[in-house]
Length: 540
Image 1 (cartoon, one colour):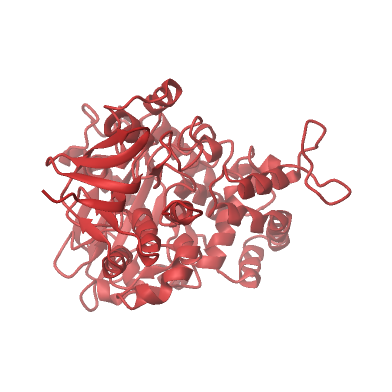
Image 2 (image 1 turned 90 degrees about the horizontal axis):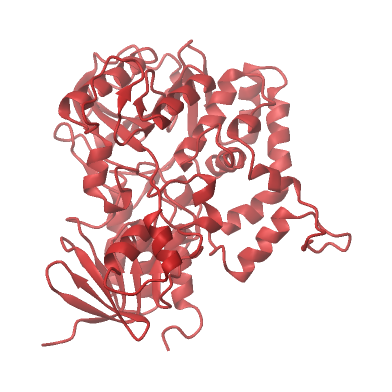
């Protein structure tokens, strides 16, 4: 029998695995990706969920961080040659308040200042001060998104960020060093970050975005993500692939195949085989065994890696304990709508806004989150709305539209309803529970968009249960692949005893949402692992 052997074997084919495979195959390495689902891409999935001709992004939608990252810069032409084309907007986000007040977030600094000044005189200057205070650190922080935080370069940047400079200009270190102003960001909240702004509309627009990074506005550590997200949106906009988010996955997969890589779908990796302290093979549930000459890369959480894939191998006690303690965050409900006509926003600017929030205030937003944290369905959900057909009419029949309502911080297993109106049973997302909660969310939309619900002609709801069944990395239904609170972020991710993409086994690597820089379509961990594998004499 012929030995099935590759330089690198990857378990899973989410976009980070595909990014890493694109770099490796470009360098001439033989790569095999094993995918449990019917096609590659992870949370990049486009389906006709509601009615024929209505193409919905089932999970992830816009890709601002990928568009500004190194992987897109390196493969842009190759991906475009394989069908990827991004459509962008100059208004990446905004907010619609229940009171009828609205705000948009332009990518231009001058336009953003004018918008905030319109809402509250003096806020334009206040926002300028927020950006000005963060600007000295921005370049270093954004560089960290493409580095293993345990690397020498990252350690120098972190030291520089956290400590004031010595008079000679070198970063201070040691117990005598005083902390920099930046260090306070790491322990501040998003609410504190926008406190200087007088307009409740602007505060709600800026602070709410931290939830898309797995944080909450009153959570210690969320403050740094307010200026970071604002700068990222100004730099990247809210780009969506023409034809659907899955176009990124399909173009990456085609690139990997064209460069000599192999992708096998519909197969479940069951065990990683270790011999003489090295990962040497991957065994599938179907009984196949694939051998790795140089490395195995797992696109999983640390719990799956150490407790399942390495269940037959000795694991350091500290690692095993921490893998058992790996925590998942709350879930997500996405309501996909087919519309007979585009949404009729009272503020016409919203026809060009990528992904606005609908809320009654920052306080209302945090109240809904607090109810979710108590495992209750929020009485008044706050969420984002995106209508991709405004930018990409190919996603629906002529004159029709699609809309997605994304409700974050929803309990994966609700134990009650904050409004006392929905019976949650055992917490499973039954059709009845799903329908009742979706109705509540749509009733909120109706307060912001006059032709909702009358324009709705089709509906499909993704629940935490849907997410859990589709992607094992989501645990009970956390779309972000593990809680992102301060105790499970940065050098504590994926595990405090393994603050890196390199595991306790030298040639076994981890990438994906459970690793730095975390979830979302950014390509960061794929880029980092690829650079590690291609560095030095790994393939000699």
